Amino acid sequence: MLHFKSIGTPLVLALAMFAMSGCDQAEKSAQQMLDQAAQTAKQAIDKTHESAQQALSEAIGSDGDKTKAEDAKKDTQDI
Image (cartoon, rainbow, N blue to C red; front, side, top):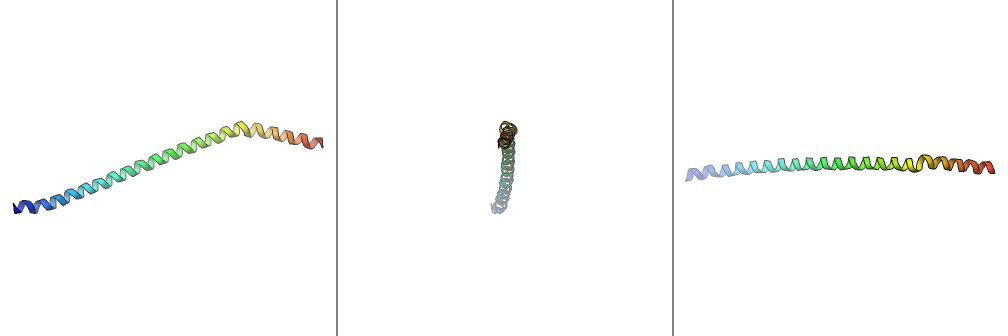
């Protein structure tokens, strides 16, 4: 029995070390997945922002600027 106990303690310690290293690996994998998800979300937000800016410029920018410029020219010519 004494021989079995002396082998058991290092075996338990070795199993604990393997379990801890497995937990570290799982934590690293989870962190990588979270980082990838955050990057994907940031890219989606950036693309949505760019699309919204482009739609806003097309709706207001080009037509609105020409109309305002023509109105300004008419005002200065009338004076």
